[in-house]
Length: 388
Image (cartoon, rainbow, N blue to C red; front, side, top):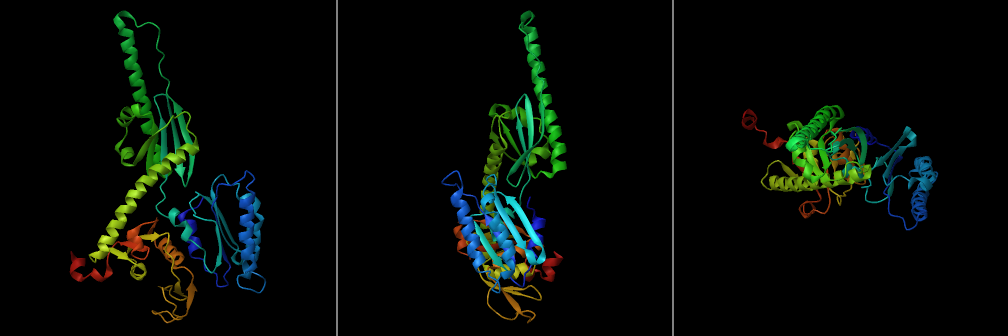
């Protein structure tokens, strides 16, 4: 399972010899059941890259890793619908292989001086771990959703009382049994609430989603603790006994997409507005790089169309979007960076900055496909403001 810690470690890797291999496999719907065309495409992709890594040529140190990926081409598509990501540098003994949700955009293979991180941007946002509750009056099932997978962690039944054939004198027994059944169901939901309270803290759920029958929701909601309702992601209709992990993943990701769409829109609106009034917003590459270096940034917002070559100082790590051979800060040599997106994402990971990936947003496109929400503005931290 991929984690921010693992990517943070990879982001700090630098290969002077250009041995860093980044491989992204995005599964597609095959035209035939044999996946033959997909395997042929992967082999052709790797072979073409191998040609540029001939012995004595640039990136020759990547040949062993590329050959290893080529050897996986016939099996790699059989990955349960998941994308495959591989980072390798044989010269440093690095081979990291991850199965991730299929959101990589396209299959690609890059050999460079640093690992290509930009395709991971959608996964490097705040990645919530979601508790999923499937419940009706007779059964409860708890699932742990994390990075596109749903795993069942607990289930229990409610032993509903049997209803006899006779209602007794004047229907007294029937009324008593109905009240007893209602109390039993309420106890079942309370038991669920207690289990959720324990699991939420132990597992570390950031959000909780419910799958249930619509007619049961009011009586479920009635017993939930405020700590549970505060983490509510939403709910969806389902049959608790029959829902599969795939069904749960689809439902949770719909809820996450709805929430994230609203969050993205709010952040873009805020950032652009703050930048216009000279507040806590930065738009455009020059301003974002400056804010990144001053550690002013809370959230980097990067568009999927962002791409910009530049240089990185070999001494102080200063990033510039020009081709200066010497760093403008310390005058030490710089190295070329094919796409500053990877360096920016790496710096964000190392400094605990949130990363948000956005597609097809006109406001972001009009500002160079990159922006940032700032925690503060260092140029506005006057003694008077700091005192207040």
